[in-house]
Image 1: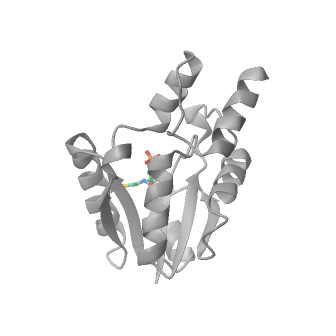
Image 2: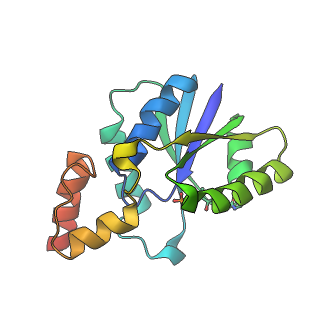
Image 3: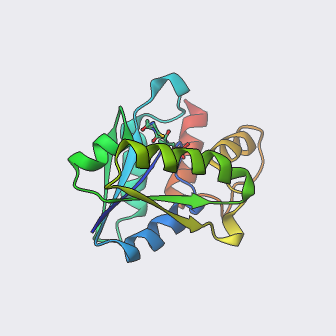
Length: 158
Ligand code: PNS
């Protein structure tokens, strides 16, 4: 069974990594799908994000990285996936996730969304807050993989 974990991953956090580790145990093959959306003015290019994820998931042989634009369910169908994995950090994620899951199921009933409760240690972590804390000089130790922290340092220098 092929599953997809889609997102912006700008950048990958340890919260994402926890979902990837758990998703890779549920699915035979897990595809990390990076949304190509330049209108969000990402900090890292899709290629940089893909590289960071590949470095972080090297230990899991059934995890691969791809990117997509357009509808997620169309990409999922093209890749033969039947499951979309999403993380739920708390009630604030729930309403948005509920709408997306129902819309995706309406668009493509053969693909279902499975929710994983985010790890308690990571349930306050988001890419947006990581970028903000880093930009303002706070510590992001333990919130992102080492390779992501290094790239954030390099991005600050450019
Ligand atoms: O980084 P995020 O916010 O967790 O990712 C959201 C994502 C990429 C899963 C969502 O925006 C998405 O699926 N976009 C693709 C366009 C699409 O399929 N829209 C309809 C979803 S109901």
